[in-house]
Length: 522
Image (cartoon, rainbow, N blue to C red):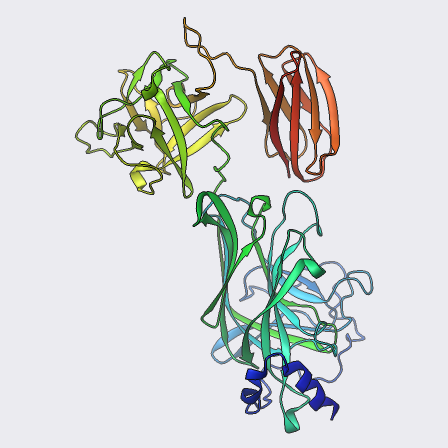
């Protein structure tokens, strides 16, 4: 009677599945653990007190094992024509962490995608079978995680290595003689509503039901892509495909994300035992540097070549090669950077965006030309990667990812050429039009501050240009002052051990003019 009551309570929310469940029968899988003894062996053979990376030789499953269970170790079985990774844990079997703190697990971790540029991702695929999951006697405590998306973030909040979205399997019981047996499993997504969220900071969303011992294809990709509603922004996404059904999720506060990671296996059992099988696992990752913050904060710039001091200039109309001139005052020497996916368009204020032709261009091999095309454009010959040197405050413009850079030739023509960074004809200053140029030599006379390296792991330098004496204050995101100093030098080295996060740097010069910039501490 109690078993029937348990089944009714667990099936109430999803009444539509009840009739289907009547026809499900409990079957024992060929590689199922049917032992009634859920305690860790007295011999201690699975305790492995010296390492959590307990694995077999040449494992079929990808990733590094994190074994925190003394009930069993990772092993493999060969059934249904596949090699399966065997993941079994029982309640209370975590012998590694302090009692009554962390849950048992045998998971595999995968190298994370540590860049946050559009196009960065971590992608895992595999096939799972669920044989048994934890049952603690209440809906909120039941279930076992089979995979999870991970990722650290700036600004604090949450545990040191927070989960972003966990895939949770809860038990569905049969009827009649199978009323006390798990015959199917409801898959949920447990995902954050805010960075570092737990408890009320998460939501639990039903995804689908799968049968016991059913082979289910699984894909999980976590990464960054362009926001379709605003090309200047990005989305941190967590997309899953379970048994052919897609379940996409946009992670909150994408600008705070620092990485994309995935773990899989078996994790959490607050009652009973959990048994998960994984086969055909693969993993790949892509890392793209985030260039979205590369262009200066002003809107319109003059591009001056570091070697010659001349300015990039648009002339004529579409398909006309750009030239170099000695003045940066005319409007046709003014340019903007427009985000186009993972790249940028370099847009003239008088014509259109720049194009980087190939070797057979009629106007000359690799000669850079103006176009009549408007930004943003995703055409491969009209998109550029911007490389910023924060120490020198200079830029290089690579034609997409071709290894060719915007370059002023000795004869004055402008190409995109394969040259080293030491060749200063490929290096440019981006001078805002709001900054005055002197009449004599077009030197730009502005006071600026720069922080490098940024992001920073520990120590960093604040450099001051055209300032005599400054007062420096650094604030955390809550507005609390975490550092203050003053100097009459042109730079200040800071070695304070700040927490990871985003900080505001405020500099006041001797004329009481205020400057701001941002610091990211990893």
